[in-house]
Image (cartoon, rainbow, N blue to C red; front, side, top):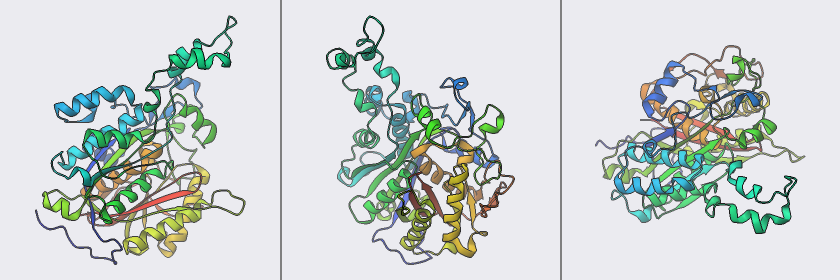
Length: 448
């Protein structure tokens, strides 16, 4: 293959160049890359009435469910007999979030053409982001029933003797947030760096940034960088509706995520996972890999006010400033920003303030897209899926509009639009995500 084009802007701060050679995603827009790209390009929403939960009992019956993902072995793509046997055997110790993360990773590996034998196992690793994972209530049905007295009251004193023996011994393995990275490493014989990051929605960018730096400093040649998350879950959904600003109501308006729009109602819940294959440029070129993009900068920032409340605008502005410094670029060099774009009032206001502070006079020029408008908040899974959306948009040279955007909120004076626009395939974009607690992550990626 032809040598990958040299960097044309800025000064690189890292010693080794890190490129993207594979992508995989599980989302409300499907499981294959073409379906995902087609939905973005044609303005198709993945948010529909909930099927996996009793929707009538919730403040809103809408969600972005990854309906194509069933947890069947076929969802993991075209894998060999040995991997099929190993993954199928371990499905019983993976909750849905872990299954989606592993499936996205396997699909990314297949997309990259990278197979065992193509890399030194000691120089290949996995870094995954996730939310904290919650147990399904039915995991405790038998244990709870065993501790009921004659009046059907729960007797806690009986828990150790009668309750615990009724819980599956491997129960905890199904919900540990380090298990996506563990499973992917085992299934693919990756014995190098292995890490798990839990920073809510900021997890994806933090994981991708750490993966980039791990390769840049020479500790690995190949890293599977991914993230998985959900807000569609028997217990997690209840927590989300109690804690987060949700778009409530039973009409169709409650099923629309409208970031930065004056008529937005709030966040829409979703589920999904994404994974990218990162390699050193030398490793990718040596095996003749197709290069999809280059990770040129990363950052994580946390903002706090004097009263210890989250200062999200400062965290956002700082993260973007540092990612540009790391990448050796200026705000004016950014082709587009793939924003957090939650669709909740205060979150969007905070993001708009942070973006305006960072962009300065370019705030009304730099295109901003909010892909959660297509599938809702996938939790920790959002960031990598959004990066994949930007990479696919660059391949097609068309940046999708923010779905449903019609009336700009005067407090969100950014270049957000509903119409697709032509973009260059080799531009630099920045992906931004942040948590309610004021943790922001940003990644700068150059297309090809």
